[in-house]
Every structure is written in structure tokens, then in C-alpha cells.
Length: 450
Ligand code: ADP
Ligand code: MG
Image (cartoon, rainbow, N blue to C red; front, side, top):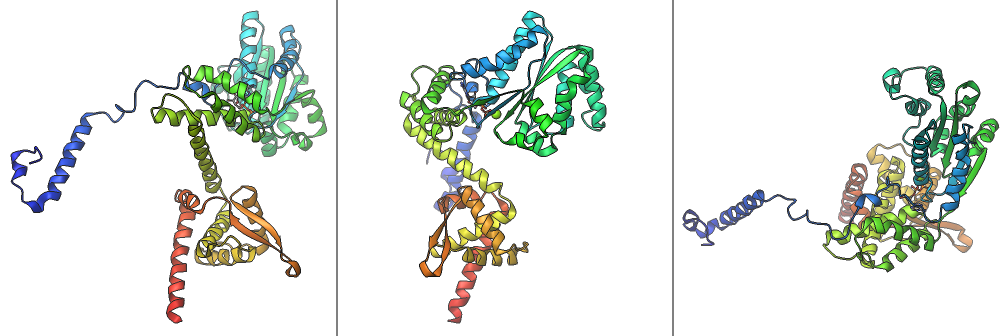
């Protein structure tokens, strides 16, 4: 019987489930002998160098940024003659190559300085990650002294003491420091412009060394928050990285694909398509590279030999889902409660014409049963507009003739998809589940009363 040992064959028919369990156990034992990765690890079919598609990868060539790189290099070259290069402000939308090019220039500067035996120190600081004056000064200090962290604690000192230690170290070491402050606007929005005031004024306190700052920002308006002195010191030179168009992004992708993939593994139309999609999103090269990477991952997982348009379409769905998920999960509580009200209303009546009043009605009930602070209808109106801007809902104003104007609200994301995403969020899933139960309960009570 089933090739099992004698002892099993004597079992009565009513014990079949037990036998099935034993067979499964037997299978599991067999699998236990194998390694779960055996089937997964094989030679990759498509990727040659996955790393080159990661966000931290810095390529050695930058198609369509030749002029910009040259311009920055021309400003910085004075460092090799011992003069302080002008401070530079670089602007440009997301994915226009600012960060990658800044890191590339840093690397090139270091290499050349070593070769020419010139004292040039470089510091790349991402102000989203290092967003305190203390952190920024420490990072600059580390470029002068490997011992910096041993001598100066990572927190706890008064900032002016850290500042004078930095001056001391700079003069002790001499040379020119090129400090790149990426996402500089976040530093200012969090701490004000005092740190920039001090950094750009540092040169007048230094005797034996100099410092130049390259500030990078997505927000061209950020200098309007600066003190006019800081603004003029920081923006001695400025340049803008304009968004790429579709053929330019395609060139970037083709160049990157040469490093990332084995030969003839990507249908050329894939590159054109990814580029055109990214060009529609303000020329963001990162979007195009991400799309290509995910499409190739999907093809690799399916054990295909070639990446096709179908993989790109699937990759797009994955990216959209991820995007909606991260927006929903990071919403503030009141926004979540408002979104939950819209989902609940839409479910109960298949309602694509909810008014702000109806959303507010459900929201108020929800606040009541959840002990949430209840905001005014006007505030909820604002939140509805924000959810609309984030692409989660559509809110359109309709003219009702002599009844005036009203807003009709509808989900912009498929309700089922949204419910799937919500399962990853405790607060939202609790809200929806308990309110749905409450609605069912109220309905059945109502029908009994009738
Ligand atoms: P930003 O800092 O402007 O948001 P990034 O420098 O992070 O943009 O660039 C996004 C991605 O696009 C990175 O992977 C970067 O290497 C790549 N990239 C941007 N411009 C180019 C280019 N001209 N050539 C090659 N790769 C580029
Ligand atoms: Mg950047």
C-alpha cells in the first residue's frame, strides 16, 4: 500500500487521514535533507552585475551631463593651484543625476589630488541623514582627522566647542576642503541657516586652510529662506540640472544595461518604453533604472532568457502598489480616519458620489467609536483635498445649478487593492473591520425593527 512500511498497510480505512499526514511528513523529511536554496541559486540568466542598478552605484560615465560636469570641474580646478574654489549651488529635480555626479566628482578630486600630491579633502554629506549642525561639523572634521571621533564625542559638546575644534583641525592639516551638502534644503528647514552662516564664514577664521561648499537641492526656492548674506556667499556660482527627455534617458539606460546585463537579454523596446515612462515623470532617470531593474528581477525569477515588455508592465504594477502602500501607511491618523470613512461609504453603496458631508458623517461615527479627536468638517475638507493630491481619491467639484456646487468623492485606487494594502496597517485594518461589523449590525437591527 502506497509503498509504505508494513506497519502502515495494516491500518484501517478510517485511518487514511493519518496515512496522508505520514506521507506528508515523509515528504517534509525529504525536503529537510535538501536545502531550500538549492532550487533558487543557479547561475543568473540575465544579470551580470546587479549592483550597478542599485541606488548607491556611481557610474563612471554620465551621458548628457558632460557640460555640467565640466562646469563644476572648472570651478573646482583652482583647488589644485591652492586657491579656494567658489561655493556652488546645484539645483535640479529628483533623478537628474545631482547626487551621483557629486559623488563622482568627489572621487575624481580625491584621485587627482593624490596623484598630484595636493592637499584636497572632500566630504559628502547627505543632509537628510545627517541633519544636525553637530553631525555636519563632525562629518567635515572626519575628513581632516581619522582620530576625530576618538577626540570629539558624537554628541554632548556645545556646538561652538565643536566648531572651534574643527577650525583647529583644519589649520593643523592645511589644504582645501570641498564639502558637499546634498539635500541642503532639509538642513535649513530643520535647523535654520545659522550653520550655513558659520560654515560659509569659516574661511575668514582660518589661517592655513580653506573650505568650499557645494550645496545641492531639489528646491530652487530654498534660498529665499536664507539670510541675504548666507544666500550670496553660498550662491557664488550656481547651476541647474535640467530634466532629461526620453531619448536621453534611453541613452542612460543603454549605457547602464551594458554593465548590468548579459548580452542580448533585454529586448531593446524595453529600454525605449522605460525611458518614455520616466520622461513623463519629470525626466527622472532613477524611475527608469528602477523600472528596468524590477522588470529584469521578474524575468530572472521566472527563469526567462530575455526581459520583455510584459515584465515591464508587471514591474510597473509592483512599483505602483509599493507606492500606494507607502503613502497609505505613512498617512497621519486623521487622514487615515478620513480615508477609512471614504472606503466604508464606497463599500456600503458602491458610491462614487459621496459628498464631503457624507464622508464627515461616517468620520464622526468613527471618531465616536474609536475615541478619536473629532476635527471640524472644514478640516476634513482640507484633508480630502490632500488625499486627492496624493492620488488616493478623486474629488471633483460639480455644479448642481441652483443647488450650488458640491464635491463628489471617489476612490482613485481600486477598492480591493486598497483593502489588501490596509491589511498591513493595524490602525486602518482595525477601523475598517470594526466599522464594517458595526454597519452590518446596525443594518440587521434596522431590518428587524421594520
Ligand atoms: P538626483 O540626486 O538628482 O535625485 P541621482 O544622482 O540620484 O539623482 O540619479 C538617479 C539615478 O540616475 C542614479 O542611479 C544615477 O546614477 C542615474 N543617473 C542620473 N543621470 C545619469 C547620467 N547622466 N548618466 C548615467 N546615470 C545617470
Ligand atoms: Mg539626490
